[in-house]
View 1: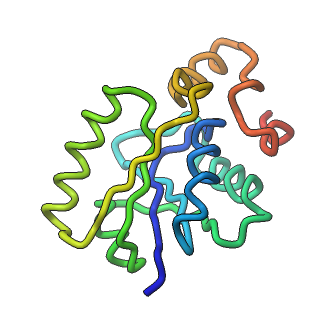
View 2 (view 1 turned 180 degrees about the horizontal axis):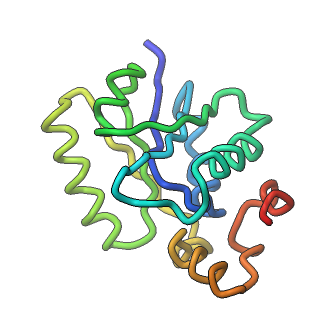
Length: 155
């Protein structure tokens, strides 16, 4: 059985923290699916196709990292893929409290699904997409917070 992990998120935009978690998790899994969840009630700051192209460009040299989008419950998407792992990054204790509840509910609905938590690298513990969006929205320089590979794509 192939070890497939789904790393769900909005990646609006992807940050160096996301990139770090994904690359550090790669030795643990055969495939990591970076999955942008589509929420019909929430409009992304950056268009979905733009975020997907950034992710594909970022991981172009990593054939075991797949970029997709999905809608609906993450566990249904995991079932569809045959994935038995959800990957999540933790920056703070608050992240753990939030993610733990989601992980327990996911496991109650899909008992063979494990949520794997990786701690963020210390230098990224204050970094979040929402902060990066706010800096960008107000004309600030976000280049220190996003992966090198997508800097030329940001316009």
